Amino acid sequence: VDKQGKMFLNDREVVIDVLEEKMKEALPEMKDSALVLKADQDVSHGIVVKIMDIVKKSGVKKLIIGTKLQE
Image (cartoon, rainbow, N blue to C red; front, side, top):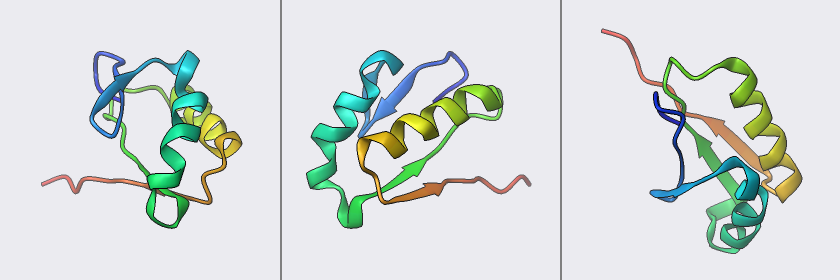
């Protein structure tokens, strides 16, 4: 999720309304059923939690939160 609220799954833009469906489609290709979730620092906590809930419902077994070190 970026500053403009755009969400991407495997570099393809996706809207939150179809995220669960798109996650289920992508699941067979995901190594160890794992997902790395990255969000811009300006994205609200509530949106990130909503995405985490959708991801969990879609069958993802491992959720990794991607972080970037501040310099």
